[in-house]
Image (cartoon, rainbow, N blue to C red; front, side):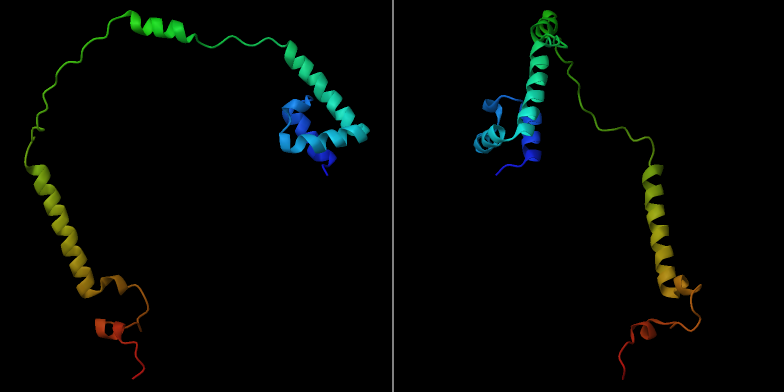
Length: 140
């Protein structure tokens, strides 16, 4: 059985004409409409809104497709210029060596920090200081 709330949603979404309602809900909506004065009032309000919408004029299209096509095809298309692709000219070799030097410096700093464990200097002084103590988790 359809409730009044669902009937309200139905007429607000599809209008007052039962032919516009979904086929699977049309029968139960018509039964509710025949026996309920509130449903008849809701349908009447939807019918008034439908009548106002039917009287409203349609807005003109924002653009006319045929006029747009005529404007685009009025001027002959230009052919594209042929562009030869060349490899980029190297400005200087310093860019390459700067990248290599930066990578080597980062690797050296990472190695030094890993070997000397400078990352753990600010922590707990009772923390293990060598790799064996860090890895030794067995009770024996």
